[in-house]
Image (tube, rainbow, N blue to C red):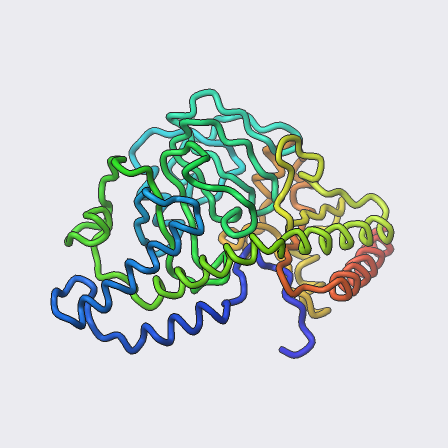
Length: 351
């Protein structure tokens, strides 16, 4: 649709040209990566090249990268049946397998008592809040931080990490679990010896090739300071919103510790439901969300904001704007103008 502005990068990032090219090339590789003939070896080489690219971008050289259908499957592989605990701010994919008993403070930061039996995300998809991960942590969801924040898996001191290709400009439907070498991981999908015996099934060659290329390109962008520029655009957006709307709140902006992702603004307008905001801005030509994409369409208050101490009405009155490279100052200023005008109309109707 012409004239639209995409501001929902945390849901999925636009496909990178490098990923598209790698996927197109992989379509012409006919072999099965498990076959021993020349065609099979050519397919296997593509998988292993992508594995090395993802590992290098993650700072996980020497660790095991296990390709999956996405971070949700990686979460099941890492967490199921282990009796782990987490906080309510985690993604649903982690909450499905962990007991959400860890405390969250008003800024969105989580306190971990027993790292070896805990899961904690590196960055939150709704608020952008970045956590300080304790050494010895069992599992960390690295999905939103990968490609946006400088970190190395080998330095984090966590046992296992979850990542997804489409959050950094790769294709949808492929991700990985990265684990310290020697970590015992019981396969949940059984039937073959693929992925070091931890995930059966013929590898998604095209998706994996795109993932590897996207990870390599994302690492280059990060090193070049691209996300520092994004953070400046986000700052311009929030200043404009504060200037144009009375009472707007940015949950997580006051987070202690590492702060927030450089691209994420959680915008809370008391009394104006998030779903209504999303629809109003969609009609105005802007794609934003009312929370995690995996929870969209469900009329309910944000769990994340509830864990931070917001009541149900406030937690239902927030949207997320998540930007990326290529989003311009002019675009976010136009968005801020549209949002503030819609908020003013809402307040006039409610008066």
